[in-house]
Image (cartoon, rainbow, N blue to C red):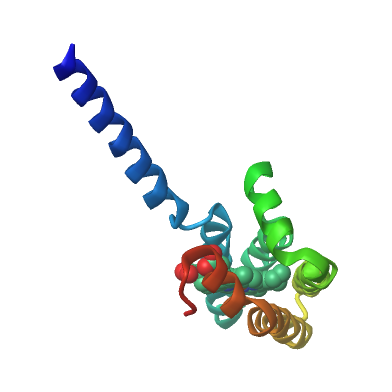
Length: 144
Ligand code: HEC
């Protein structure tokens, strides 16, 4: 019986240690961001090849990027507090600029694609500059 108790106690403490490690696991949101980064690279290379179909398709993926799962969204909303509207507005700018890139690609207007792409990059940067340091500090205990 005593042995069983000891085993049970160590299983419990293992579980606690595991959940603490999970607390600083990257958010799904970070996975979405990594994907956006790769998609931006795809667009850059597609522009160089004047592959407007690929630009269009990839810009759509950026515009329709995944939302974090509900539980994670709650943690983000809680962290953002009164800044949530601003955070959302940056996200809105990214969506809008990505749509502009897609529209320009549909009519194969290279100059407009590049102009809209610059707007898109600026929208990413604006949110990163405003929120990323505090965000990573809060969720991972370090800024990067
Ligand atoms: C609404 C705010 C917001 C917008 C808009 C935004 N990002 Fe981010 N991004 C973040 C935050 C916050 C992080 C830090 C997330 C984390 O580390 O969990 C991040 C992190 C990243 C990272 C680093 C991921 C890693 O490997 O740690 C990349 C790459 C990235 N974003 C790309 C983009 C691109 C490309 C766009 C525009 C198409 C974009 N982001 C638009 C908020 C935003």
